[in-house]
Image (cartoon, rainbow, N blue to C red; front, side, top):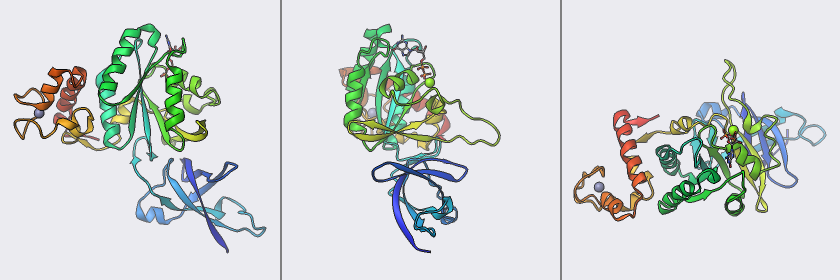
Length: 315
Ligand SMILES: Nc1nc2c(ncn2[C@@H]2O[C@H](COP(=O)(O)OP(=O)(O)O)[C@@H](O)[C@H]2O)c(=O)[nH]1
Ligand SMILES: [Mg+2]
Ligand SMILES: [Zn+2]
């Protein structure tokens, strides 16, 4: 049998059957399985992976059925999350609300640290701004000072939406993104506002987590037009804060370097074994006192330090 290769991106994988968006125009998807060699190597292709496909030519020159196409190789996997199962996530939109529910910055800081540690760019979205504009802007300031892009906005008044849309159009073409945040902060509303073509009503991002005995949690990527390109939005029904927090090994030693506004001060403390909690001569504590590091970021550092010290590792 003749064979040629083509390339594409895995959009979903359920029960060993993958949906792959082929490169090229017009966009075309195929269903296929992975070669047995993946099982031998104990590597599982994941949504988000770029893959090479081996295509066997059927009798009429066309690939006749699913079995004539196989995932042959994973190309350049940059990162892989175990939970949610997703490869190459580029952007994590950490979503909270100015009010209803009350913002919890420690949770935001935990998510951003884990994302940063995994090479994922966190973007802070503060929704429901019209309920408390001063609070929304205060939070945005904290995260801009810490070195993140931050967008206070309201889906009800439309304020701030264009700024986020501009960021998305500029940065997301060709990238994989996900929205995380507590239930009720307004993620679904925002996604509908940003991407009207997304059909939230018929499943997709609003789908409930399937917890049945024979269903495993899976992620699906939705290709979306952004800024003249295509972004891949991860359907993450199971992304509670906790799920994200558990996705990777993360130790106490990783914490200071994973907080991007604290990291530049490392190595500048008086004592080499400084824990940066409250020590004399701590460069980080001094930077907080000067107003160069937002106090809430250091409070989160201390809280997360305590958790990590207790647990040794988040898993
Ligand atoms: N006041 C206000 N409420 C909003 C806004 N955006 C969404 N909501 C409301 O917040 C609630 C939760 O929204 P939803 O999108 O389902 O949140 P999700 O659980 O994060 O997906 C709904 O009642 C929305 O109408 C907003 O900009 N302002
Ligand atoms: Mg929702
Ligand atoms: Zn220190």
